[in-house]
Image (cartoon, rainbow, N blue to C red):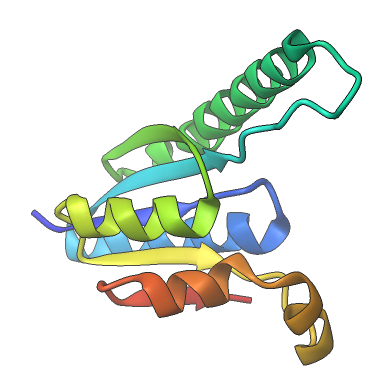
Length: 140
């Protein structure tokens, strides 16, 4: 059975990507793995180390809540879904997991920033397209 890796970040394009992936999965019999990647927080100078630890823990909890809510939204569509929460650089973790796991493609949303914004801030979707060895479907 094929599987789609769907990277989510709680943005509307991300949720649109989930909806599209669920429709595709229901037609092809594929399952979905919903992935959320939390970027670790470094402790700012002058603050105790617990600050970053507590903030990262809070972000992990929010990420798991997001995964659980989105999975609950997909399950009534008759699609097999599981969730995965990772810690690290989002683009690299998405590409690494796509390579390591048996997935047919990666599906993710894009915020649709213009060229200047992408150049200044970068885009996770653009980085994944360049890093990933599997097909990447970007939803805008």
